[in-house]
Image 1 (cartoon, rainbow, N blue to C red):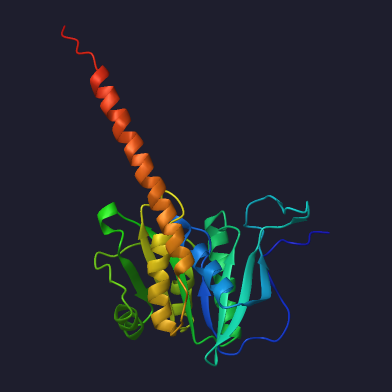
Image 2 (image 1 turned 90 degrees about the vertical axis):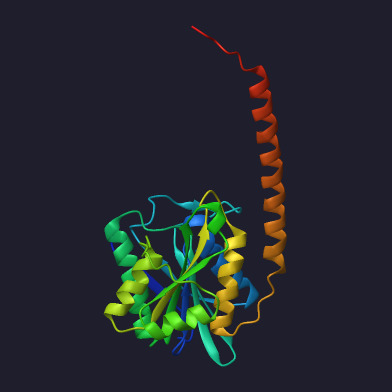
Length: 251
């Protein structure tokens, strides 16, 4: 019997009421996943659901105990100042265009069922190194854009495509008249970017009135910058060696 031919959400426990939903799957700079994982830990959230999809990679995930499971997204809930937050992250992105739409649609459908007050997706945006301090905000309404700008986000006036579930969730929410926004951290996209993640979380914390201890991310940033400095120094030394050893041929 075929047990997983469509995207499904398995839920348990009491359903959240009118929550804010924050979504961050793996993507550019791992910003969405890092940010939501950080929130789940900081807010001591409890797992309330799992999403499974045949559009996730065709592989099984094996944990440190040797136990196997399917790739999935996980939904966590926490109550902060009388407002419930549902945070969604997971192992991977869907592997096809159709799968991206199906998973994003499932998340929006879930939000509509809970009568979510809004959806906020988190992702990354590749840019040159000189622009890496920026956080970009987009939304379904002018009022939401203004709120994001007040919290420290910028508007990318040239227009940008937001690839993946992070973008589709917002666009599909608009079609269902749900309030939604996306916060993008600018990054080189060369690897996990805790610095961009921190900037995104600072904006999100202002929007949701959250008090977050970002010290752990600060330590990660320092470690990564230390490694980057060492790599740059090695590259400079290698460049100097190459220049000294260059032989000029005239023919």
